[in-house]
Length: 196
Image: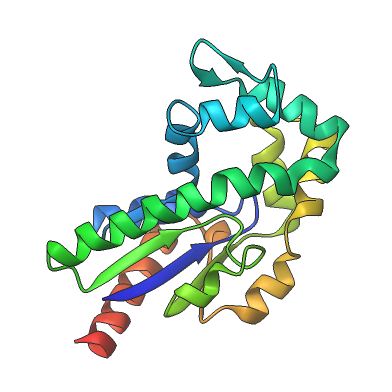
């Protein structure tokens, strides 16, 4: 089974691109969605133990956790040490399910793919990208987003140019939804001819 990593900087159109793969019948394992589920289940007690007061009513309070991490950014590795193994276990389960169902291609949607060295478990990596101006417009339109938070997130991510340099394939999502969908389908066809 061919594992295609999907990544891109915040606001680059990764979620939309993942949706086009799903639309085409390709299974996608979404690391962000997995974290959301973990924050309402298996990770709650572990996060509360490491970051007291960051859970409410059986769920991780993302705002409270973000406040702790903003005040103490050096503690990000502590959170990652809790969350990443749980996400990896969910990913392995998703890969197992896709293989059992006979899929030849699966997409691993991982925001910090290069930053966490997840490319080592992918057969190829697709990087989605967009102009810095469009990226800023998209991200700053999100509820609760500020310039300061946007720049803090960017500081934790590999520069887009370096992601593109490491990519096996790229899609510019700034060209519109139809163009991005066409590019996804073209990539699926190209991969199908490679993996049989």
